[in-house]
Image 1 (cartoon, helix red, strand yellow):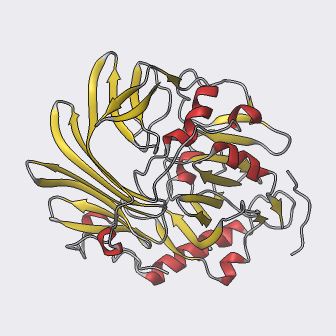
Image 2 (cartoon, one colour; image 1 turned 90 degrees about the horizontal axis):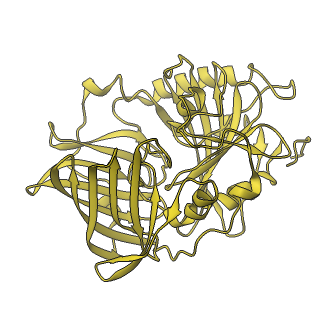
Length: 395
């Protein structure tokens, strides 16, 4: 990894966060960025991918049991991924039983940015999440409508790519393969891991928790059974599947829209705006994306203090190639950046402090720039992420 000097990515804001306020907050945070702990003494730069990333990285909960206590070699993470034939779009419907209550969940995805998750019980919509090209939505059942909770680009919510990460999970001892099975007459490979793959906050290994997942050759989870202490918590089984489905883009901007929800103002304090030229000039690193990947956009995100009382902000660059998406973020955490949060594993590597975050949606590599700043690279192929570190250079 080279760290020597080197010569020389617009949507609508939520009605809860006026543009003028968003820009004021972002400007204040990044004024801090250029005056805080710098890795070379000249002014710093940051890094991470989603609005929740900086928070998870700067507060360190106890690590899940059985994660490697010592750094793991980069080669353990950079293993050849399992074979996968991921569709550009799909729709899958599950019969779900959760804590004894049945419901139906339908997930529609147009990779890499758009998704719509609808959960119904007795034909009534009880919950929903949507990501369009420029908005992240949630369904408010008490208002019978959809609220924008953050603008700008996001990776498609709840879109799993488990086969892309499974070989690495097994190499780390976080998963194991069982006898194959089938669902809907579709053959699938069966794996055992920790918390459920469908939970975006899950860790691959948790004491007393096991998840058995059956994954087909397209990388779709056809069956998932989650137990804690041997007791069933939830089970989901695919009952209908469509591949390469035609989905109108407007489907991912659902209606009716809730224009005003003041009770959520305190919760939705993270803002996002397109990165302007001044913001882009603050970037402290460059990266060479893999062949075929093109820059889709760059977003500035900033949030209110996290649980540790530390303000965090990030500049996120999005690179896409068909179904694949790589996010490169520079993050600044005013209270100091502890990279070991969120189930991260330390990586033995020739270069700055580096941590790896295993995930079945998009794993991440975090590399320190300074006491308060780091770069986070997120994507579905862990081996690719490790390889990208070699292209990361400081400006």
